[in-house]
Length: 132
Image (cartoon, rainbow, N blue to C red; front, side, top):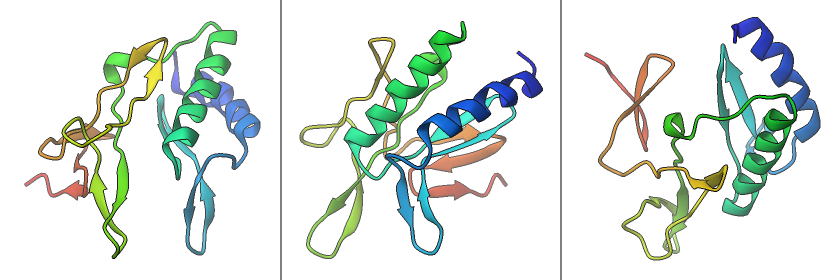
């Protein structure tokens, strides 16, 4: 699908989900989705909210004859850890790891020691990595 067609379709999804289930950014408000070309990134302030965003997105795409490619999906989950509100990467090594699904398939959790490439930029669970 061309990027233009994807963007025309995905704009409607953004209208449907509005600012529900988002992650609160100070000074910005609730952020729950960003898209570029034919890539989409979903964000939520809770694991329940993330699964709800995935369900809404899956339902929206299915109704239009489209689907998410689970093989290209990755979930990064940060949880509060300790009394100082530090963040912990919640991968499969933690007690009670998160589980996000699309099409009844689990989305792989991004592990703490992994890197992935998104829009040409390499990331770890802690942010962008200099590609040099």
